[in-house]
Length: 388
Ligand SMILES: Cc1cc2nc3c(=O)[nH]c(=O)nc-3n(C[C@H](O)[C@H](O)[C@H](O)COP(=O)(O)OP(=O)(O)OC[C@H]3O[C@@H](n4cnc5c(N)ncnc54)[C@H](O)[C@@H]3O)c2cc1C
Image (cartoon, rainbow, N blue to C red; front, side, top):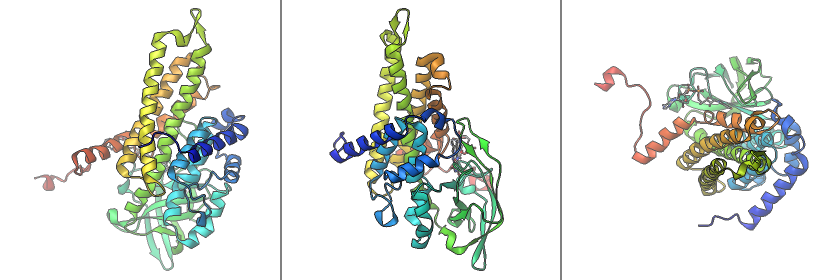
């Protein structure tokens, strides 16, 4: 067991940090408060080799590991938290599921645009009546000659106001076995994108309506029975969510640490009060322990997909720690931390969302409990006759 980065990883981290300081530090505050996807950053990152880190070189990626992508998130977020969303998009989000399961034709058609930072992709999984219970989704894909007709509604999709391509979970037939996914381009007739709505974080999302939206059969990513594979791909998205939560918590920690070293009250810097010191000690313990869980999940996945259990443990820990630390950092910085001219309150708001997004903390704990007891706990209400 080795708790140190390899020399290669150290060099990579250093190069990403230098890139972030040179190109991303200056406008970090404005970028955080701009709800639109930062395409300029995506193009710069593409040139720097930070898009498709885990995607094979044959598909236009970098052929690196999941841990490399985690390092990129950490280094970018330490300088410009909002730009870490671009690392997420280019490495962890639906693009990764797409690269894993797409046909050569699908990849040739869309990956170059996505990996160059010219286009962004959005994931449509959640529906008005299917949130945590995602397998209750109702959006249908019915065969229509050489095409499929889509009908249904998706909500909360990240990057939906800007996305050119959407990976949509659909129902080809009944039950979990009937679930698969399709790719839908923005301007497809019958695909209606509602006006932007806003999360607490300032991020925007649009309702996605499919009204007899006709897509060619070549746009099917995973047919019936694809749900398990999709969730395996989704564990990568969870690692990106996990890494950002922890990195945003660390960003807030570093800002609060610097503040406590210079801000004086009662004639002394804040860091000389034991009440403040212990807050930092508690935050450091939380950050360090959560980081080990994140690194375990990412390292064990190597170039493949991470384990569902290790991902659940890491995400539940990092989501909670990221939020707790950012929240405490706001308190330590007083009105300065609470002000929108510091990015600390932004980090706190973003971390709050990740406790809900991509598998809420509660749903992850259900998954962990199943591992603990080595049995499945069905969350569904039993029918009266079945219970008797
Ligand atoms: C910032 C953000 C970004 C998002 N991005 C996307 C995206 O890109 N694409 C997409 O498809 N969706 C996205 N979502 C939606 C997200 O996947 C859902 O919010 C999530 O699945 C929870 O569903 P829900 O909000 O409907 O809450 P519900 O499922 O209604 O849950 C409400 C509460 O009940 C708890 N709960 C539910 N069931 C159980 C249970 N069995 N045991 C214990 N507690 C339970 C939940 O943990 C939660 O606290 C995003 C959400 C957020 C906040």
